Image 1 (cartoon, rainbow, N blue to C red):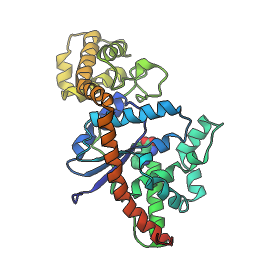
Image 2 (tube, rainbow, N blue to C red; image 1 turned 120 degrees about the vertical axis):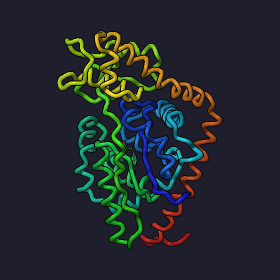
Image 3 (cartoon, protein in one colour; image 1 turned 90 degrees about the vertical axis):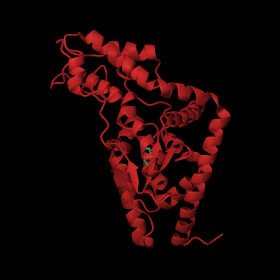
Image 4 (cartoon, rainbow, N blue to C red; image 1 turned 90 degrees about the horizontal axis):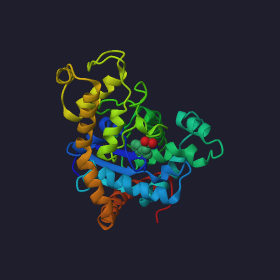
Length: 331
Ligand code: TRP
């Protein structure tokens, strides 16, 4: 690979993204590939730390893979693979588990939250989740990891694990830094615009999924919660309108001033329809490309097989050195 910094990121196999994920993060990944070496991994092994229906997990993993390609990850430029296809992740995880403290894992807020949510299944994998994540990152000696706030604590732990390993066994792992992307806009729920748009929202009208069809997208925007004024302006207290303006601005590139001018004297109905149409048109190429890819199973398989081979070659070198460092006998 060329001498550029290396970015690594893992993506949960949820099978789809929200408009919030897309505007805030995913759509920036394509352009990154020119400035960095990028490795992206669909983390099916992390996914089974909570109960999954096997057939669904398989489908969602493939969907996520195809969707990442449809969103601009180019398998010629980047390495894109499925975590369980590359055995070094599980192997390195074991070594890192032996360099991670019970106390550290016990402090992870995501572990505490998920334990509360699934009190009948607080399994060891859920507990050691962050050391597998550290293995993902350290196996490639990644320089940078794009993370949202919810994963910051896990990345911090990965750094601590790397530093501890380096102290015990001699400088080896690159200590990864968080990659703070140019802030993509934050997209809020269409129904409760003071809350972040979230896939797990109980109200489907609150969330735009990037694979929603045009009619669905327009219908959800028509129902978006606004306020009792009738003025399209960006102002404190107008959470609903502010959110719609943010979305409209993100997909059209227009700034708030020109949006205000465009809709001066018009009602919210016109504005919501315009936002819905702009979003649907913007996402159209992603939907079309996804539909094409997900039908072409043979091509998809070719891509994820090649991705796994590249990832294995790369990470096996790291693992071999780690095995020597900790004192395992050479094969
Ligand atoms: N835990 C991350 C999440 O839930 C996914 C993930 C797994 C990840 N391994 C990673 C993210 C390595 C960055 C780097 O979103």
